[in-house]
Image 1 (cartoon, rainbow over the protein chains, first blue to last red):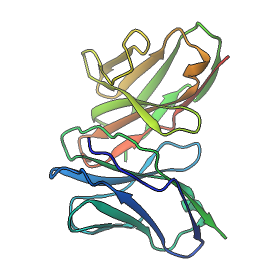
Image 2: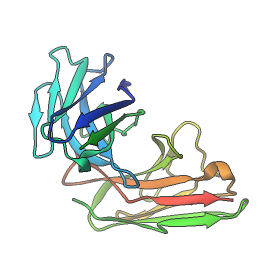
Image 3: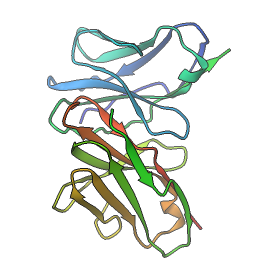
Length: 111
Length: 115
């Protein structure tokens, strides 16, 4: 599986957009970009995934560069409850591809 | 989304003993996994639990230490054998359902402390 690189920590003011970057320069053509988050003492939670087009759901937006070597997860209006560790993962879709976690980004949303 | 329960939610065990963790799901599951999360660390995949056959272990994990069973589509167990303090971790069950192959769900985890 391709590896990802994320900043270890970030701060964001409550109500502002949180932009979490991820580098995946060795991503393969059939690998998707997935984002999960883990709120303290809970199991990871799926956020969003995409292949090459930008994606949006009720939780976040995912922006993938044209060369697919990096992406950004956007939380449009961060709240204190968004404080968590965010993991960017690449894997093959719909083939039982294993989720291999990196170190993630610890996002702190501050009042 | 799938509802996943794990038992026990936490336990404190003595060195040299074994603990079996159960994972029960309320819906049809295509794949089940077991992860470990050591204190302050990210998640590490232990193995894929295969129904009716031996689990598939990741590098660094062996069946003698972490025997896994999956007798049916909705239930699996992970045993942590001959425990040492280094086994103190959160153990998480994870799965993919037949209806949502793009999303992997995680259980609440079992917090294990070995003295």
